[in-house]
Length: 360
Image (cartoon, rainbow, N blue to C red; front, side, top):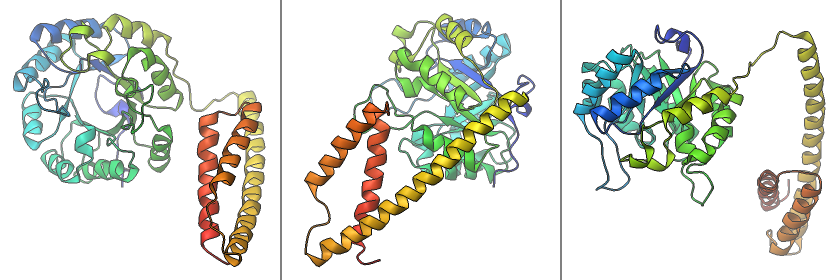
C-alpha cells in the first residue's frame, strides 16, 4: 500500500539526507513575529523548514484561532527571504486550496482531523496527485489503525511525499508530560511500514521546555527521520501554547547537543558483539515463552478447580498479593515498576480469560 513513498532526501532540493528538522511558532501572529523568528531559525544549520499555524482549531471557542489567510502571505515572505521550506496545518479542502495558492511546501494533518476519516478523505481528494509534502499527525487517542488509515487515504490519491508525525496521545490520567508518547505504537508503525518517514513532535509530547530535549533524543534514538519543534521569538507572549515554545537560541543550543545515531554499523567487531547480545536475548525470550506456557497450563487447571468447587474466578486478595510481592521482587532486581506492573496486568488478564473459558 505504501511502497511508492519517496525518502525524505527526494522530497525537495533543500533536503539532502534522511532527516527533516522543522521549527517555528505554534501560530502566525504578526508579520514582524514571523519574519524575525524565521531569520533567527534560518541561522540554525539543522533546520530546513519553517512552521506556523495559520488556522488553529482550539478545544474551546474564544481562544486565539489563527490569523487566517493573511498569515499565508507572511509565510510566503519567509520562504522568499530565508529559502526555508514552509509548513502549516490544514483541516479543510479550502485550507488546501489557499496553501496551494501561496505555494506552501509542507501541509500537515492535525491530530483532531486525523481522527475523522471523512475529513481526511476530503483533504486527500483536494490534494490528489499533488507534489506537496504531506505529514499526518497521530490521532489524539492511541488508535494505530486510525492513524494508518489516514496515511493510506493520502497514499491512495497519489501522494508520494508522505510521512507521519508523532505528537503523543491524550492522557486520561495526570502525567509529567502533556501527551503520553506510547513509543510502542510508533515502533509498530515503523515495523509495518519501514519506508514511511516519521517525524517527532517533542513540543506537544513534552508540553514544557523541561522535557523537549529528553523527548527529542529518545525519538532520534528510535531512528525517527526528524523533529518538528515549536519556536517563538518571545514564547511568553505567544497567543497559543506559550508554555511549550522555546526561543531560536534555546533551540539551536539543544540541537547541537542531540546525537543522531546510525542504524547499521559496518564495523565487524560491533556487529559481532551485537549478535552475541541478541543471541542471549533470543534464548531468554524462548525461555520466557516456555515459562508463560507452563503458567497458562496451571491457570487452566485452577479455572477448572474453581468451577468444580463453585469459586469465583477473580479473587482480589490474591491479585493484590501478586502485585505487591512481584513488584517488590522486581525492585530488588532493578526492574522499572511501571513496565513490570503493565506486564503483570497483561499476564493476569490472560490468566482470568483462561480460567473463565472452562475445561481446555
